[in-house]
Length: 63
Image (cartoon, rainbow, N blue to C red):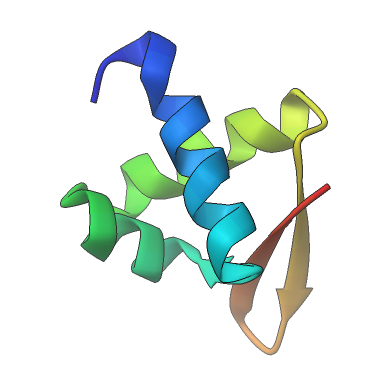
């Protein structure tokens, strides 16, 4: 995924699905779980998404 568009596509995916996991993002974009988690954390840093830790899984929602 190109760096300039990765966060935009990722944010669209999160908004469309309301709540996503890192695994769902990894599967959809055909990237590793670690890469998906890193991209999602970038959205949190940019204040575009929020992470909720729940029962051993990270849930991600758009702000």
